[in-house]
Amino acid sequence: MTADPAAARSTGPSTGPAADPVSGPTGTARPYTTPIRTADWDTGGEPFRIVPEPPPAVTGPGLTVAERRTVAIAIAIAIADAGAQWTRALLCGEPRGHADNVPGHVHARGVAVATSCGALTVDIAFGGAMYAVLPVDRLGLGLRVRPEDVTALIAAGREIRDALNAVRAAEHPDDARLSGVYGTVFTEEAAAPVELPDGTRRLHHCNVTVFADGQVDRSPCGSGTAARVALLADAGELRLGGELRHESVVSSVFRARIERPTTVHGRPAVVPAVTGTAYATGTGRFTVDPDDALVPGFVLR
Image (cartoon, rainbow, N blue to C red):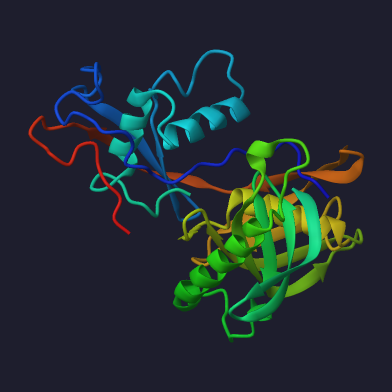
């Protein structure tokens, strides 16, 4: 099954190109002496920092969401607008930000992957990003979806992702920019399914999503939830009218359902709808001291 449309992904912070600590990258005096306004939000426990007035390179007129994603990735590897990269490093890098902040179609089932836990099988699904999905008990380590097991799950999730990407197990059929396993979703049934009078089901699952460079999503993960909807629909466990209550490792909840069936690349597909709640946590006004040698910021892991 496939989710449509695709959601955009974000990448982790980067220290970016060399920058003059007073004026920013070469030839750019403003806006680096101008305060940068931000709005911070909490979505299911996952922090987001929004820049209401972003650099024009990211929000150029006529750009689609997919094209903005391409620009953002280019900025992350320092091949695009230096001013936008400098702003990103300033807000996402330490000490103003943190490396852990971030942040469906069924691509394949029963994919074998060799790990230090032994031979495992995973399903690979797309919900805006490619995810390897497996029940947490398949690791055979007594791990659960709970905060005290997060460190071990990070290690396992990264190992699974790296092994799959080494053999190019997740090539997107339409857009090479979306190829590669982005994260690993460890799932667990939180409660038995509830059979509804109309014959549909209400499911209650929880998960730990390990993504990017070993970050753990504090929320149930929007694109990961969309991938779960695709897998559950493909298995016949979730149908039109049913609902998935998807819980994170910190007990926040997204609710997901099938919006409508469709087809993608000639295969049966679904358009998932994911609902959650975001809360404003604050606003910021970030400034740069001309004498600060650590500008624009750094990442220490």
